[in-house]
Image (cartoon, rainbow, N blue to C red):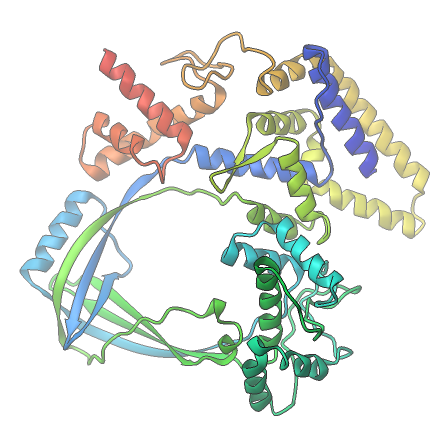
Length: 508
């Protein structure tokens, strides 16, 4: 079924391009690859179409004795810039906040379980910016050197059949870990009970060191090995203990503020795996009803937009959450999307190419089942039905062929349309009418010729301008200029439309 879907849709895409351009281009689609591409395109569009809205926050710096700390509005925020300016003025005129309530809370933080492959890939990306495929390759190299267990596992569990004591004793001979092992031996008194995660894999345990001493590891292999060893040791350690303090304060006008502190009481497992240790924030000793002096107050404007993450790691996590692909194949499938030219890396960031967007659109429009993760569920149901005798292999394959045959017939009716779209995306064909901004095929002509992407950006922008005018107390032209300048927060397509509208306005 995988082969039938993949090979037929892949060839359909390639045939469309060859008919228009006469050239052979390698394109592909598949049960796991295509839903992942569609998800990448969805995220990419939201990133490019993000229109930020201003929000305002007050920061109050307080001092008691020699210690300074910050407090922030609790449960409220200024609605407009004018209101934020007014509140900061009031706080400067009456420079104190009164303590209304103080609460302390102790928290126990359990150790994380030993790594499965997905967790290791996510952590290596967070700490070292390694791609999932690179982390997988490094881990496989360590496995082939007998330094770690089999890395292609979904398990977060360490079964009792593993000789933990022997492995830990062997790790003590490695200078980097000798003191940590000594600490663990004192802490556990020889009773080794690892914390177990939720995820399991009947074929393989969680990734763990074997105890074999590594020799001459290069820096990248050493980083992955170190993460695995430390996470393994941490799994046997005791929970960490932290203390949180929350202080509620009010100003002269009854507005509520909050100051929060955090202190590590016992490092626990953080001694072995420090990469998740929280940053401590100290609050001085305060008493209820006392007035605390304000030494500085100001407001900040933050432009808020809902931008999803788009990276190899975020796509890997999405695939895991949807249960498509396997530990062994997910990173490779993401790399295929890059190899086909659907995704690219620029400046350390993942981008979706025009080709990737058009292939995604074609699949969603003409092969909708292939764009959905539900196809995997259907495959699993078929396999279960065959296993239990409710159907046969032949019947399932015949049904798949009939379904694909109907889709391909429908596809052939639109072969020229698909071929033109893909040829334009590949740069092999010029669109008849171009977008005034990007040169893509135009779909709208007012207030200027726009492609479908800039048209949607224009619609979102015009809906947001009145909100910015009200919040910032500025004209529509100034609101447009402010959005056009928010390169970090606004999507590129929105910025391009805003700048083009400014240009048209100046020409008038």
